[in-house]
Length: 284
Image (cartoon, rainbow, N blue to C red):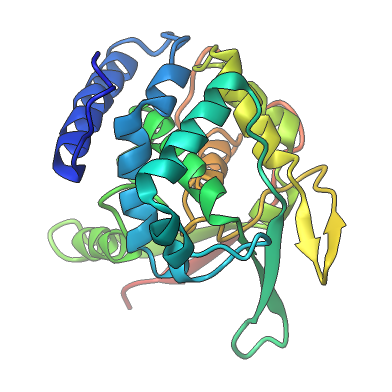
């Protein structure tokens, strides 16, 4: 693949979509298939450019992480220069993510706060590139009834599905909602990586994810280690930019979860998250 020539955003998107389609097809055709050469896709200039385009479109691109850099700073220095530097540091192994800046948002009516993580912009680009590579593989495993943090799916789609089933002639009477208690804050790093290794054997990709999990949080100006959990809200709530997808992966393999995906691996043997269930009668 010739990566030396400059790409525009459209060309980059077409290239990335091409290998994403292949990854998704291969993952769907063989549930036991393991992927061992993903890092080169992650570092490809087209992947990094698509990642940047997605990051910059997000409103959070105007919000700085611990390094104080925003979209404006990247564009001032030159997008090609920044992406080239990221690619080089990834390839030579010198890349190291910075701690995530913690920001507390009050929860309406509860008196509690939701802790969100704001990674540096350069880390968001790499996280997004990681998502572009991993998402097609895990998408092949999710159940059709799963709507959380998935591409082209949203909560309103889940509501429409409920409406479909409660109306005649199906006339279902109950809607059951489950909530994983402190999913982001308590997810087990070891189990999470074990689940990723079930499909991904590229040690460079796994190392990169371990780095993000261990990057820590900057809390009130002081760095704090993160032996478990992953920051909620990191890079638009998807995949650390992979954190919610990982949580969805964990939940889909939790024993007792309705309509879960099962495999020969037996799911998650330890540290099962607590799931809070509620039921609502939909008809009288």
